[in-house]
Image (tube, rainbow, N blue to C red; front, side, top):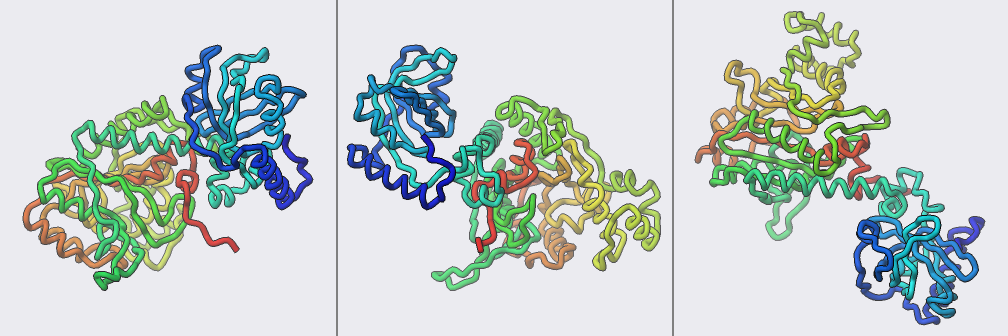
Length: 485
């Protein structure tokens, strides 16, 4: 039985160390050996057959003794399952040794499946062994860690005691596996490009900087794999993707972590519309294979996101007109600023022209209102230096920002393959903090890159949306945290 809840953590630990010593004296090595299981506990439940002999293992979640009987619930991460120890079956010595088992201990048992009078599927134990002794008390009553900081810092305890957390990370695995399967079935090749690079490129972000001793040069952790992937297109690959880590030395909040997972996809001879087809095919596929539904509840409100394609497509300027009035782009700058302030926009010194003001209106007032899957198109060229201009307007680029639940999930481009235009775009990009242009990449373009469509999808945000959480740290096993103390 569990010790009284009046003990301190040190007293719990002392008692468990004493139990460990007694178990060792009784012949139960506290950190045992490999144990051959018939299946995991979910598999045992799914294939349950009365009278079948099985070998199962797991962590003790509950323990209840009734005279010559002890009922224990084990959990191995896949499921919880009841086992029953009978003194007359396992023998007095083994039964008495089991009294020294504590919540959190990991045991292996062999026995026969049966159903109790209460209707619970159970293993009638013939023999048991200790596989790992827990000398620290598990989370209170296995109800799970309630302190969110503790859940992130000690994820092992969160996974041990919060089934919802374990389910979310199981779904993350299935989502990533599903992405790989979907793209591979379309003929895409998965590739790997450098994480440590001589120059950050492919995005405007502050990199993490390190020093390569052997080369005696400064290096950065990549902020995006884009420019290396495009070099592969120059080299002859035509359908490629990379699924891996990017790093940006920037802030931490509910939707940002400095280390994050990204999918980038490139298709030679494609464009923005071919990238749209990938998004509208892949998301329903993930919903069907991982979730079993395309109507996905999201956030504390349970808002339903509908992933049944086709998804809405709308020009950025049209969204701004919907919000600010059809005459917005004909207003003088001072009138527009006053109107934006009245609509709730905080005016900052950086908003020095109509283009910047309009983009800020979208970023701060409009994007968060786009709840259902939406492709926002026709973005001003100064904000997307790696994309090709729209055929009918050289001031706009042929891209989409795919927005779900008020967050950008992925941009999709008709990629720039003109080296002269790329060189000029690098020189004129809007972000003053952007890295200097990668001239080696421009040189690669001069050898000829085919017309190309590309997209970059934040996997952490995708998992957030598909699993219903609004906090990125819920979908990263070990998120970046401030040091304790």
